[in-house]
Image (cartoon, rainbow, N blue to C red):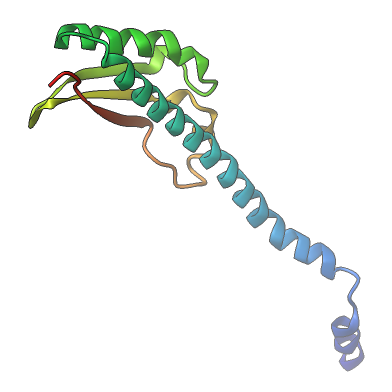
Amino acid sequence: MRKLIDRFLREKSGASAVEFALVLPVFVLVMLGIIAYGIYFGATHSVQQLAADAARASIAGLSDPERIQIANRHVTENARQYALLDVSHVSVEAGPVATDATQFRVAVFYDASSLPIWAIGPILPLPSQTIARTAVVKRGGY
C-alpha cells in the first residue's frame, strides 16, 4: 500500500489536465465578463454621445418648443449611426432645466434589453437594462 501511495504522489502526468480543468471555467467567465461589459460600456458611451450632440444641436432653436423639436429630430436621425444602438429602443426627453432657466437639458434613454449580453445574465452580475444619459447646455443670447 505504501508503494502505491508513493507512486501516486510522484506521478505528474495528469497534473496539467487537472490544472486546465480548474482554470478554464474561471478564464471563460472572465472573458465573457470583459466582452459583456465592453458591449454595455460601448452602448452607454453611444447614448451619452447622442445626448451631448442633441444638446449642442438644440442651441440653434429660438424657443423651447423649437429646441425640443431639434433635439428629438437629431436623436432620431443620428441614432442609427451608432452600431450598438437600435433606433426603435431610443427615447428622448428635452426641455428647460427647472432650477435654472438659463440651461436646456436633453436626456436620452435606451432600452438595452436587445443587446446580446443578457443571455449570460445568470452567470455574471450585469447593470440595468435601461441606459439613461443627460446633457445640459447653456442657452445662448442672455
